[in-house]
Image (cartoon, rainbow over all chains, first blue to last red; front, side, top):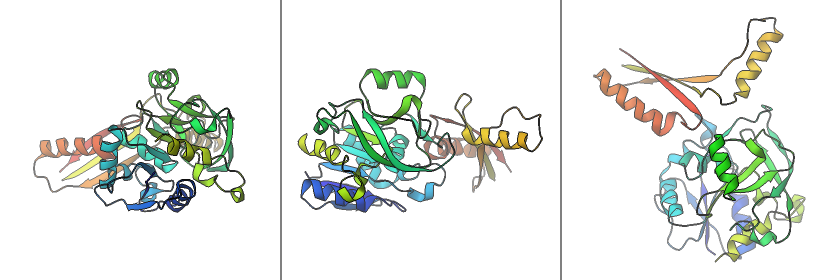
Length: 220
Length: 80
C-alpha cells in the first residue's frame, strides 16, 4: 500500500501519521504539500492529519478544505480512493462535504487531551476489520472543537446505515449521539476526532491505533 | 464599497460559547439576560462599483467559504 500524508500550514500530526503508516506498511510515506494540485500516481491511501490548519482561523478546517490538493482528493475519494482524516483532518472532511455534519466547539468549552475509550460500532468497515472481535479500544483525543453536530435526519441515517464507526464511551466533547468517527456512503472515507496515529507504539501508552491502519492495508 | 457580513450559528444549534457569555453576565448581576448567541463579523473592502454585483459576489463568498451552512447562517450588508 502506497500512502500519502497531506501537510497544511500548521498541521502538527503529519509526521506522526507518516511514521505510523511506515511502521505498518513497511514503505515510505509520501509527504504532500497542500499547494500541490494532484496526488502522485499510484497512491492507495491518503491521510489528512491533525493539527490546526491555518490557525483554525474562520472555522476549523475551512480554509484547508478549499486548498488545491484537497480538490483532487475530493474527486478521487468520490471515485473510491480510501481517505482518512484524524482530528483536524475530520474537520476538513466535513468542510469539504465528503462527510456530513460539522465539528463545533466542545460543549465544556475546554480543550480535552487524554486517552479515550471508544466503542467500535461498525467492526466490518474498511477501517476497523482488523480489530476482529475487539469491541472497545483506547485512542487519545486532543481537541477543542470535536463536538460533532448534524441534524436529526442525518444522525438517524448515519446510525441506520452503519456509517457511525466509533462512539465515545463517556462523551468528552458533547458530540451528538456520542459520535467519534463516521464514514461516507461508499465506506472509503473515514473521519474521526481521536488520533490513532498516536497509538501505534508501546511507548505511546497503547497500540490500539495499529489495527486501524492494518484494516486499510488488508482491504487491498 | 464595503461589505459587512454577520455569521452566526443557526437557531436550534447549541452555542456553548453564547451560553457561557449569558451565564457570566448573570453572574455579574445582569439578571435580565435570558440567553446569548455568539457570532462573528467579517468586513470586506471591495473594489466593486455596482451594489447588486457586490451583493451577488459576497453571497457566493459566504456559500463557498465564509459560512458553513450546515450550522451557520449569514447576513450581508453592503455600504457605499
